[in-house]
Image (cartoon, rainbow over all chains, first blue to last red):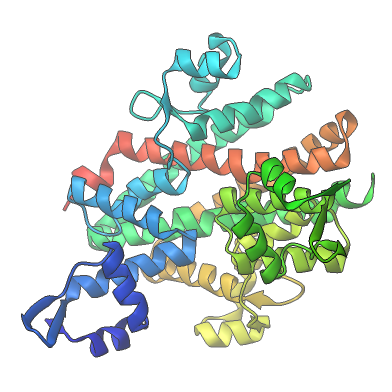
Length: 221
Length: 221
């Protein structure tokens, strides 16, 4: 199926100027040009536009982040929503190209390597392809500040513990979904679940608990 | 303390053009102009710039979302990071002005009101100021799709259960923090914890579990 620009605008709901901008930025493919005044877009362009909208709406992705997701997708030869599995890492802030070994990170942060090992063992921070990114350093810094206030890091260990329990259930649920529908539909649904519904429940529950307790806002100044 | 533009640029690390753009957009206050060629910025402007950078870096906030956060802050007369408590709601996607009563939402989604009540009781969706926003409708739709595939919603009930357990610990931790440091420092730290560290642990754990299981990517097509 080949689409003219008008039809693409109509079906995607994305304005022409935006589509042309995406092509210029390389996140949409160039159209077929069988004649100088005839530009034809294929169905994949439409699907890609939906995916770009999804990334923008749900993760506020910038054009550069979308580029990174799409490049990753090309390398691994995966479908749009499948690329979201890689996208978690990018959305999670692994944007920076600076990477550190464990030794470098410990030195940089002025901490004992054994403490970093503990955080890795506990599942509070994670190596990515054998190294630590800027994001991990940021996380370790948040933890170290608690440490320097003489507060224990039980809360973070508890996060890690709960996170593992839930991850097991999530993988089991994805298997159930795969028995019901196509791989593509499953992956889309998983990301709705993991990246939209799940943070909603956790954030709103925390918010309501604070609003109920009003610890922070009202009892002290 | 009054700052000239050069000093503000130096201390904030934000380029002059960006600062002027923020002023034009109304997210930074106009400078004092004691003489036509002398523009002076106060310390609050510097603090506000840090806060804007924080929102952009960690939540990819757009200028419009930052405007909403700052307007909310003005209404409730709260400090920058304290406004983050409201910001959760905005970052969570309560951007839309369309709101629904329970009855309207059930009718709109073509569902039994009793099912919606169940989701509210379970802590899977939440009323906001007595109504449901577009975000809640989106969440309910994700849940309904599972329902229509004859899959149980145990996973979501489990999310809600874990979320409540963690929220209790978080409120307790915030009380400990308040005993150690100022309210302002506590609120900044809580948001580092709740909105940066916590999603990191949950998302990375899920990602690693999937990569380990490779259910989705490799075992089926």
